[in-house]
Length: 607
Image (cartoon, rainbow, N blue to C red; front, side, top):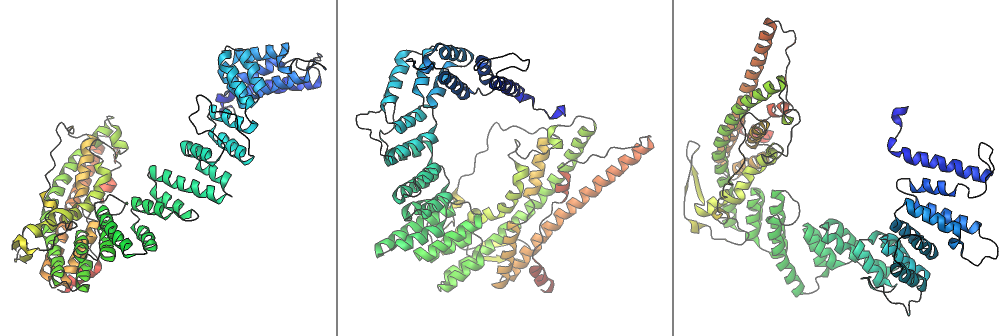
């Protein structure tokens, strides 16, 4: 069908068809009309078809001129075929149709320097430019000259292949000198190949060319690993360094540390550790790596894993129990921090783990109240804004944000990021404010009959400080200044809808944050703090219930309003009342706090 024809290629197809007909006519010695013709009769028209294709087929055109010139050269003729009158006129004709510099570069790229000279003579090129160049290329060994041509034309892969071949065939470059505009190392050895490989990232081709030469392969592999590190691809670099024969241990260690792969780093380090000094250096490196991991500077790990990995490093390579316990506490891994403290007979650290869990419970209870209030307000406003947006769609005034939700809006991608924020909001409190509350207030926490906690004690009760201990340190952080000039949200706009939805999702608890709360309840119930565990259990369920109730109330009200609108429409004679549903509604209606594990619910069904 005509609809399947690619009109962007119609010129090329016409040129190819005409060329095929003319070439066939020359082979037959006559046209389809019976007219007798000689070889080369359609030379200029055929050149036109080559020149007018996109991109121009200049190499094919020059090859045709060259072939025609050789075949028509008179026997015993002294003049080179390309300098015959017909060849010269053909080149002039082609130079008229195509860019003469491109034509010269094409001839040069065919490694035919006589053809390049003939093209240059029949174009506007300055003899002072092309004659010295062609003279130099003719004076060089054949393959090395091709390398220089490829380099000039920026055909770097071909240049590397020719350079490697020149070295392999031991072409003699004595008496030759580098080109005036050549910044590369002159020669055809491995150094020159490595320079080209690193400058133009030709490591893959380099490995193909030198794969059977162990020394060269090793050098290219190390260069590739360093390049990957510079490009911030440390995981791939690690594998490359380890695939080198012999393994590049130092390079692999750099890549492992850069990627946050602490396991590989210490495995490689311990394989090299042959003295006490080496082990001491590993311990120093371990302290730095633990700090990097805990601060999120290396590796792409979840928050809890970052602290847990740092704690493992501090235990295994630094024998630093205090800092390790601090890390486990920052990860809200109460049971593990207490286990480690118990393993090393540190009653003070065991008590610290329990106190930290109680402090976290207190923070959670305070935030539950705020989250419930905030969610209800946001839910109420959501009902108003969603009604405005539906009316706008129904009236034909829909905006792009109504029909296709844009997560990357000016509200800071709250819609797409709120889920993550809700999972980390409580967790972030422990690594900062909640753990800090122990240092600044108490290691003895009591709970009254209500949900209010009272704390007593002094700051010097917490005696174990280290650079890994977040206690108190993060609390001194200055509050972020509010950004001035922030764009205000237009009431009822899609942007406000995104913002309100983000607020709702931020104040729901699920996934990781819910799991931490569940672990805290379980831990407190097992260390004699059942009252605290019960309070946190009840507080979470109360928040969960209030959010569910708020959602149910809004959804029922919205359904009733929709049904009433349909009744009014039918009463007024409208047969079909358009029901508008925006893409965000299903997800928002499904917002709930996650359920606590069945084991915890079973526990408090008995107690």
